[in-house]
Length: 299
View 1 (cartoon, rainbow, N blue to C red):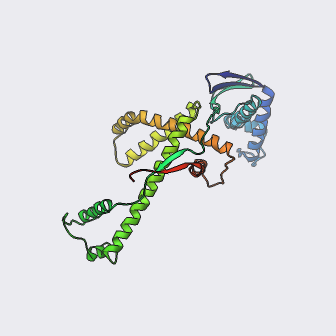
View 2: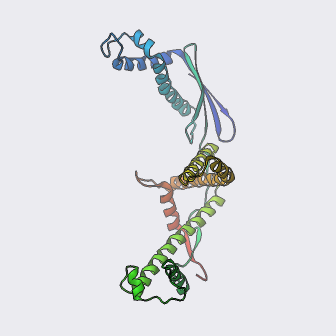
View 3: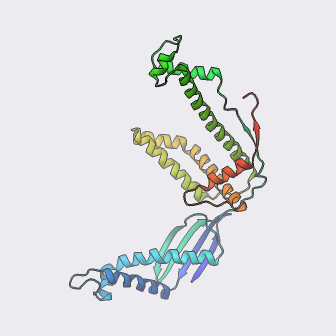
């Protein structure tokens, strides 16, 4: 087998494969043998039709099956022999059977080198989750408005009972707990965002555009489906997609950069995940634990 590798850019590689006729023939024989066992040919019992008859009847199917099996097999051998580490699935094209042999091309991005240091002890600032009386009162005013009450109306136990609580004090405590929990969640997201921004600034890497392209397509498709759920017309969907394309591209590149950085940290710290765990979530938990926490001034 002949393999050539072309360096298109820092990360993009183009590999060309030439698979000899004997290997193609062997794989085709394996595929045909499997088809013969299951083939139902008029005039023959299942699995008893002559090989040449099956080949004539199912030649196209056999060819596609042979290519489906042989190309990944050859590709894996090629990247192993060339010590390449693709970061994503390859684009396979220029597939052709020539004089019984097989030629094809694979294009892919290799995993980039990621340099990230000083990721332990990143200083983060956490805001207070305390709810002020003013914030609580504003929320109670919203409840009044939702009940069609006058802005100056006084809240009492009867109002609380209408909300499913024994007393007004119980209602206030429940609202207070929910508001504190909301603040805690928001504050944690804010701290995580601080970590992310520091990591993105510290790390040095080139971003594989194949991963970015996939991220962009995923975001565009999600956006497209959400708009259609709300009954948007096709032309409106297309217009909004075009308007938001740059935003999606920037977010996708940021996501890919962050994922690769977190992967590098996981490798450096021997962080592994179980079947139902998320690597980014686990690495972020590690970074939060290692961070230097400061309380925000003035709440």
